[in-house]
Length: 109
Picture (tube, rainbow, N blue to C red):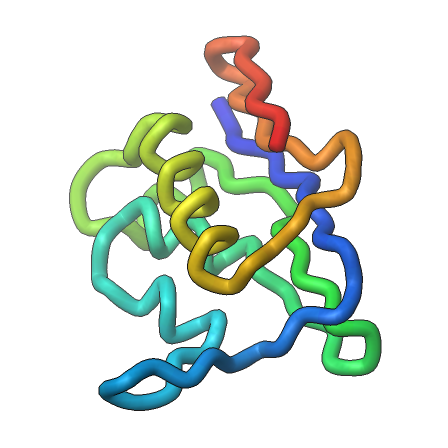
């Protein structure tokens, strides 16, 4: 069972966002210690030249050893990516998705 990430944003994003209490960058957003955020952070990549953020790669059973407890379900991961997209004003390219190949489930953004 694995989560397969294939999400890519439209260009022009900034890696950091200024808030009242400081600056939050894309990696910091997922620095909560929660398992769903650990999975999201693992797949996160940012291209400074184009301003494109992507979530790419595979999270499988071997990666589960890095978690504190059990793997969150795909819907928890989806909610965190949606919150990230809202916070950083991300618009996804067509066909951006996460696949849970264990349950044969696909979430399109």
